[in-house]
Amino acid sequence: MFRVKVCGITSVADAQSAADAGADAIGFNFFPLSPRYIELRRARQIVEVLSPGVLKVGVFVNSPIAEIRAAIELLHLDLVQLHGDEEPEFIAKLEGRPVMRAFRVEAGLAGLKDYLSRCQKLACLPRMVLVDAYKKGAYGGTGETTDWKLLSGERKEVRELPLVLAGGLTPRNVAAAIATVRPAAVDTASGVELRPGQKSPQLMQAFVSAAKQAFADLG
Image 1 (cartoon, rainbow, N blue to C red):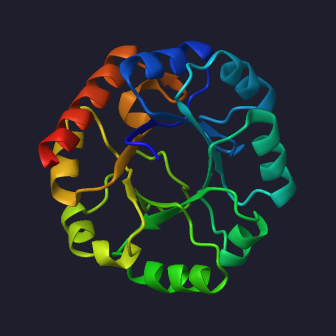
Image 2: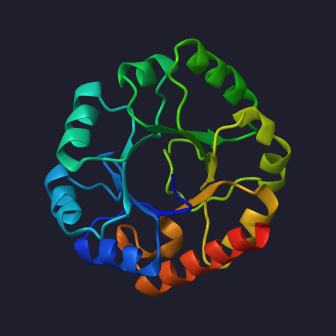
């Protein structure tokens, strides 16, 4: 659904800069404990002026179904990113809404195979699988990287689903990450920031350029 996503957008200016840089998608973080948290009202203001063609992704961490549905309807979200402890049964309750399920990796993707098998039995396989770095007590956006070589060897665990690589990606390392893991897409937040919640137009431009060149080099 996208190649390059910039997550944790909190302002109209940052959304426009991400679009100008060539990002395919932007993410709104609705987890109240995140330094990149954004209220629905503010997210709607951004959506109203967002460049056409840029996908809108809502990031949720253990949110009630009703809150997710309300955000989908208000913002016309293209994708729901579940970044918490949501079980397959939770995805089923979203009744076919496009879902990207995030997994925080500490020691490989061993648990992912069983999770996706359960999803298949419930006919609720996610559209994409996002792999993020694990840090105790955190739900992403930590700036930590994953073990790219380990992920490269365990790609089979995500079946045929598109794999989105996240976790500590910056303009300097994203090309190497793509070459090693060969993901379908990449996602960055802290790697293109001046401070949590405030993006750098220059870093976003550099990140998108490096990522898209790396994807092109893959063929």
